[in-house]
Image (cartoon, rainbow, N blue to C red; front, side, top):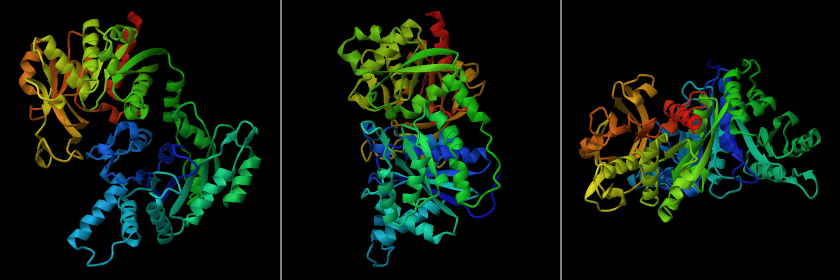
Length: 549
């Protein structure tokens, strides 16, 4: 359904503290509006000075989410996609770094005709152009502003929003402010003052919030909601309690019951929107909260100290569990412990029903990952290797086939480069080439590429008999096709290749219960209501394994 009138903009800001869940709020609202038949797209404004998160340490910023068109973006865009089902693209995420990079490039070209380049109007104009760029046929654009109100970094974005709210038509914009209502245990009270201060800070920047989403650990009584409404200049109905949920998948239903979507629509004067069809989402939550079985999957990686480093992966495993009505318990294992103490391998991996080696960069922990591949192969435990995980499976197979010293050029000089840097690959625009040195940012094979699957292979059956697929990539190194014969003699079959037949995309072992390695990142396309077939298949194999144990 396309609602009449101009595209409406919802700006989501956060105050009091960081990590209140602005991304989840925006995603849940997007889901609820979509459930009413309205078309929605999502944006994220990030105040940091990196051009994109592509070169950031996952420990600092969590995972890098890659879109179909090859943009390296913030992990919140993963939430947007998983909740709304709408694929993000390059223009949905912008950073201060990109804004300043573009402005300085224009200044150097002389585009400003000698004008003094300033935050206002030049930076704010660039932000406004971004916010208005992709209106298309969308009913709503939901725009999340990263950071916390009052941060120096986010001031240009706040100023741009203030200007936009004045420039666009009345009732074409709406501000949702996410705040915290803390509970002081010693006093036995909820405190509204932090929310009042946050709204005052926002108002001092010229932005009046229309809806307050109040995060709290305890129910907010009507008296406190009225107090917040009085001091923050909003209706009581616009003060939406947002209590901690048992799962992120329970949040859209919870916010709907509290009236978030109804209040947002009311703010735009929309009173005739159809009631939301939330049955598909209720099915998702039912499968999550009422599993019929349980499996334990070991993820052997190097960033296991921060779960956000593998956010999409974790969610895709949950989706695979939903597809099988099974609870997936994830055991995060630091690959380095196997390098320090090989006896730990059996102790850690034996109780598991499946082993997954995810993507990553660098040599640290690689021998531990190879050891876990060997364990999965020898013990017939379901194995799933993603990106670097597939490369580790190929190195392990090469060593098993007698190629001593098999390694990756990523880890230094080697006489047996089973994995090496890709210097050229085919895209729709033609041949892409890359030097070994040079900038790291944006120089990988990024975005969606096609792959051809071997008919009658295990992986083709997983994809429902498909022989062509499209998946998202993010890698700089690739399995060396020159080793293919030796690896296939060891039983590792190259069942998926790039359409030109040069780049290995999928390997599998037909003589194993479930052993698949993929060069792409299938977790990026998994949805709770549409689990990715590889994760659904992997969890199903782990379930069979659990019944054998």
